[in-house]
Length: 219
Ligand code: BG6
Ligand code: MG
Image 1: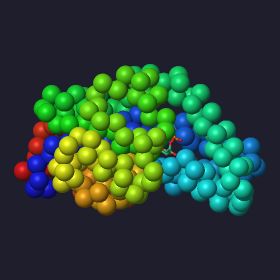
Image 2: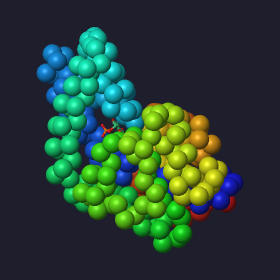
Image 3: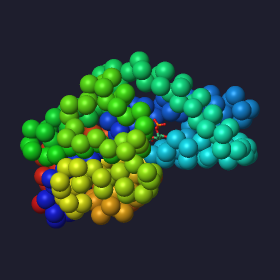
Image 4: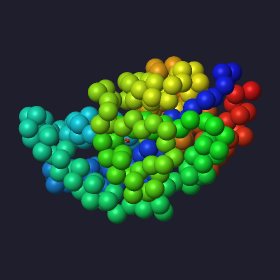
């Protein structure tokens, strides 16, 4: 990695907060109401994917095909359960190392943006107290195309006034790592090498990241 890093772009679910479990519980409940099982392994396929695309994957697992109106109703039902769960969130659900690294970025003049597919991002940021850490927030309410389309990160860089090669994306989903690459940005995968092997670096959590380590990447 040779270009200097001027900005860090963070995915939200699974990188900064542990909301993947709530998405899973709500999708599982929906699958059960529809009469089929939905496992944690199935859930891996939904990570980073938009709400409607997630529903389509879930329905394909259950072998169910439905009209647009019925699909919208199911997505809304799942979202209501999910919103119920995230409305009770607080700072304790920020993932280990996230707050410390966001603060370090700010202290060292690295710009910080959110790049999330979620339309519920603002509720989560406000409930966990994370909102003030961001210079730009791009979420599912501002984008037309979902990851692996690069739009969410391209918009984030534009809002920050930096070029793609000056950005590092932090992602826990394969679709997000691909989106970063398509945006011309470097990426750091949060999770396992097995699923995120395309990232420039993979670490288990933000506890393993620091401004010092970021500086080493620029050397
Ligand atoms: C992503 C999650 O961040 O947001 C996906 O990884 C989720 O699992 C997507 O489907 C959309 O979220 P929401 O909150 O708009 O339904
Ligand atoms: Mg994620």
